[in-house]
Image (cartoon, rainbow, N blue to C red; front, side):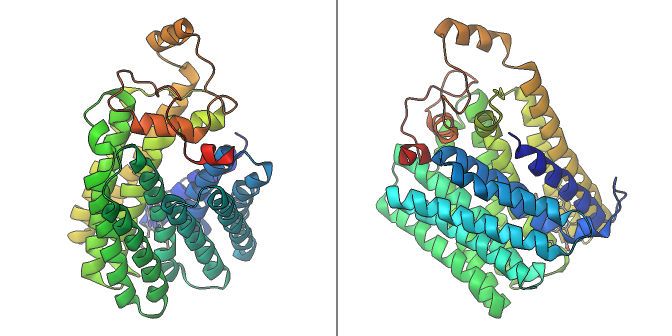
Length: 403
Ligand code: HEM
């Protein structure tokens, strides 16, 4: 729980930095926040959340070194200290994340863990490059590889509930290799690297859109449907990002840079974060975060405003539209945070609370329900009849391994 505070601060600072980069009024007008926006958002915010969820799932005290170091690195990036301090801490935190995946791999050597481990290696690679002074635009393919592979690995893991042909799993692993190769090649030859990255992202988007359980759960109701909608929209943005990378070749500045990065980071990654928040945060917060239909509003705003930013702004060449869309993106993220905080504060809707008492269910805290167990069930249940995450009878992912 305590680690959510620095992650939240990093998010607010990253959003402030986004406004600075957009060139619109920001609560804190510090160029520094614009300079560190990318690293803060990727390693500081999403990286800390990923590491925290993994640490909770593997149930090893030492595993918490990863989110602690990532959160500390983010805080160190905020004041006008040399960025080397924050970058060194981020490198240590990402290496610790690699360590967590090595632990999991020793217990469960499956492709899903390998894909997520490759993502963690890409995170460590990005932190090392930043520490060595490589410019952020050159490092962004490594950021992309980190977050995309983390999500793809998780989705791959869930496919065991409705296993696709072996060829599909193999294709996802090949696409993973292409993504990692693309990030490496882009360092030396941005055009060739961009082509590889584009092919990998389009392939992953197509495979997930065709075989992910979200295709099934989107026909259910409540939380499973909300999560599926967010995931399917995310897969579409991943395809957009890959296509743009293929068309544009090297993407290191200008409208294509803005479009590709935010199709991935807002359209895909942030949508996944929103999708998973109601099932991951309860395990970390030790309090339920009940799903409420109003959460669809920030989700819809995120995707509509992103489409506006890319189409009317980046594609059409209108700086004003990029600014309007960008500010609406920030509003969408803040609105989701506000909705989630409100939902935690007021607790489950009365009918859910009554049903829980009647069924004499245990609490949602991590002592009872590991994060990934709830996550698996909520994602994989075939059309559960309620808005609440389902019971914990389904197989677990990392929490099974941790035993
Ligand atoms: C919430 C709304 C957001 C807005 C309005 C926003 C805005 C911006 C802007 C205007 C740029 C500069 C683009 C350019 O140079 O052409 C930028 C860069 C970047 N953004 Fe965002 N962003 C947002 C969210 C995110 C998120 C969620 C992530 C990652 C998870 C992210 C990662 C990045 C990265 C890696 C860069 C490149 C930074 C650099 O070149 O120094 N952004 N963003």
